[in-house]
Image 1 (cartoon, helix red, strand yellow):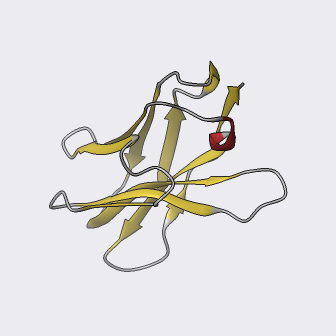
Image 2: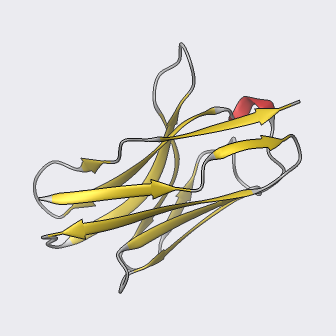
Length: 116
């Protein structure tokens, strides 16, 4: 069973930066992609960014130019660097690990709050 441990969330002022980390542990086979989603109060969970095992990235339009996703395959860790944060970035951020086969694994989420 795979466990995901997220860290790096917190309270930050608008215009600030933060870096989220998500480390996967346990028995892991054939990770296809890792990524981050977020869910703001009263809204649906939405994609923030993903990165495949060969480094291809995909970003939501709302974070393009402000967010950078990266991964360390040896550490089974994915990172999300967010700059120029806005109050609308406030949400619970969830880590995702997608496999070649079978359902994905979700993290428990880490709160990011951006104050104006």
